[in-house]
Image 1 (cartoon, one colour):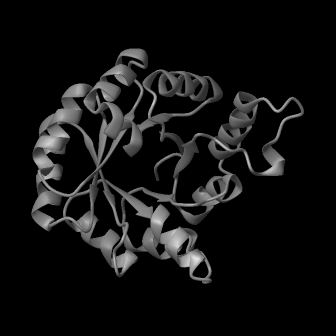
Image 2 (cartoon, one colour; image 1 turned 90 degrees about the vertical axis):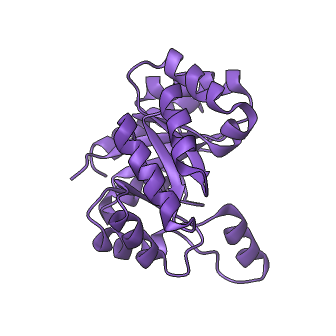
Image 3 (cartoon, one colour; image 1 turned 180 degrees about the vertical axis):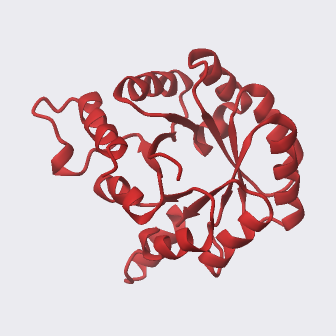
Length: 229
């Protein structure tokens, strides 16, 4: 079983702010840094290089959401210093295979993202079958907002999380609209890779410190996850 691991998603567009946020997160106990899609769109592989230079030895996830050109995208990010890359289940299976091959060639972990799959559990299973070493069980931002705007209950990754975990043998992380308390609970579902988004909103009363100190709050969250909450 993969140990409980905290990943912070740097969904920022300013590189200096991202580095500062990452440094704060590392002080608080965050294990993995994610170059979020907005950061990659703004700065590309330069963002990954900057994170690698500032945080040697720390795992860095490049959230590429790769749909095509899989080998080249994974190769570029691996050479820039990423330790993990993300490929989409809705991509052609040849693209997933290409990313998996690049992962083998460059020693990079491949995370398969099931966002948008008609059957989320089957999507996760197919990603593992194609060689992905991690599953990102993901309900998208637009999907959540659109369904809620239509007056329906907003979907949550927790809805199918146990079924996804049971369907695969690789580590799973759940992403998409989770509160801090829900994120902390993910390991209890068998999903040990916990993602916290940045900009951070500490929205759970149990994690608010008397001073309102964001770093102290994040440390409380990391401590609880690492203790196997």
